[in-house]
Length: 123
Image 1 (cartoon, rainbow, N blue to C red):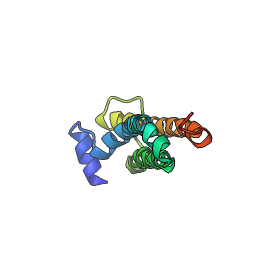
Image 2: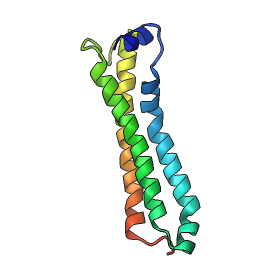
Image 3: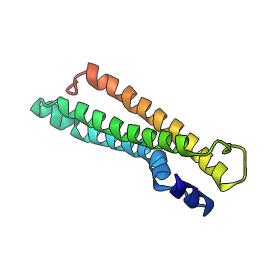
């Protein structure tokens, strides 16, 4: 990816790396906030599927960050390491952090979804 190399050499991070870092926390925040806000509505109308749709959409958003991080990881040159001082090495660290961060928030979203699948929102 020549545009990745040019952006990194200028000292910036490409947009898809920022998305890899930000998508997990954003998705988790929306999942937690929307599920909490819509629990009363789901209970009063009987539309329990709404909570599950929110979870699936938010998990998809977090997984898109994981896909962006994986794509960036495969496009980085092999000489990039996490211990160097070059801009390429900082980008490599950001990509690794984005992979772990996105995966951790996908796990958090799934962990919060388990009680929603098992328990009724009206309890």
